[in-house]
Image (cartoon, rainbow, N blue to C red; front, side, top):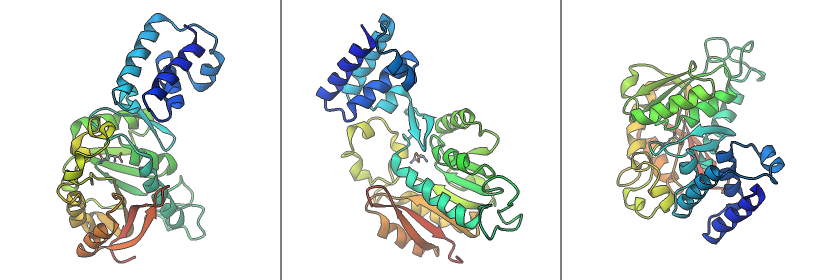
Length: 305
Ligand code: GLN
């Protein structure tokens, strides 16, 4: 069968099964199995596809139609323009989380950038002679695939990070992703329960996209999420706020004075999270909306601005 015919057939099959973005998914499945980039895909449109590849592609189309997400089938997802390996042990990086990356970068630009008119003296996070964000120390809690620190360090060439996860399997994936993006030397991976393994270390920026779904809502999640993302990475306990409570309790100890923490939150959690921030003697500086205009990230300081 010719590549063009195969593409048309798969696109049709996906469409008939109500898979959104059928065109893009058909392309990605074929490209993955034939080892093609988009340029080759178009160039080889008239060529024949071998039998073994055909079988494998059809097998994956079957999985997709049964509800497995494409990222789960291909075991990779794009986030911040970078490719991340994903498995059943990690949450698939979501576009919403790019809001957090943008919020952090906005902050680093005004506070740490070498382009700033008021660069910080060396030792306070800034060294105008060196890479972007030189000396910034980032802590990412519940790192999963490592998408947050890896995306941040891809923009901040002078920064370093510590990435924590309770799951050793998730850390394995995060290490793999760090290596793939040449960041193994700039990220230290720590297995632990939030900040428990961090002694007295403190950081300039703390980030987290913790599990924040209410337990009672897990049943109603889309089956693509419910059956494929690990429950450990989704569930935030009865009210969805368990992880924020634990993290905020220890935040001051690990956040350098005058610095910031950024947390992704659920679509309806802004007021609850702000209340918790307040109760923890911290300060909500602002929230950042996602592309749909929903407050998705809270920016927190220790209260000393
Ligand atoms: N930090 C990872 C992400 O944003 C994992 C988050 C999680 O497991 N809740 O995708």
